[in-house]
Length: 211
Image (tube, rainbow, N blue to C red; front, side):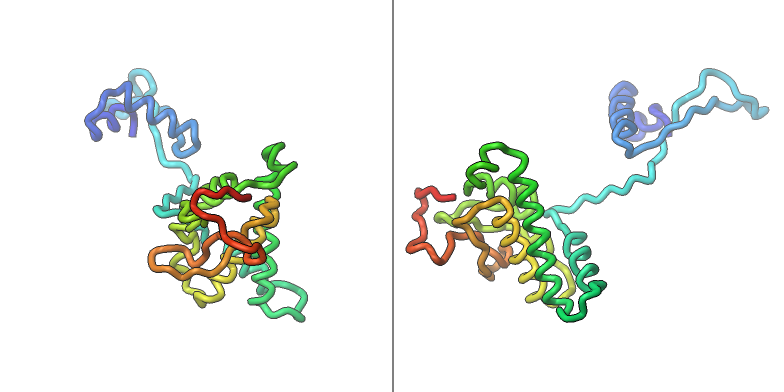
């Protein structure tokens, strides 16, 4: 299709159609080629027109966000591990923890203050939001409104534990020493809630700040 085809099909101006087509082309979502119109005698005529076609770039839109590739990578590596002394489920939990630490360390490295002091509760909340957990503060805890791994057909207890270990590693990696992920199977929530470490003498109130 060229810009005239797009403008006519969407009921917008040619200028607006061109603007959006060029943005999609710039982002790699379309590819373009030029072709002249043909006369009844199949001879090219006029100036070449620009035609747009879908590119081979893969696009996935998921609402709410899902991160199935993370669990797929962990399980594939666990199954293909050379060391047979550790069974695949235990290996998967180890790999999830290590993956989380990588994520946390990368997040920590992006900010000088975080590198020096560790991530605050607010910073952890932002990171969890970037990871698709849809976090919100409730009474001093971080509740996760979305599970990025919801819908996987593996045993739910294994997926939930992979999720918890992934979050545990993430918190360790970004040096958030006073927070820990614990199982909390509430309807309509992720199976994990991020709260103050149980070793602390008491949990904070809604207005109390902690790292």
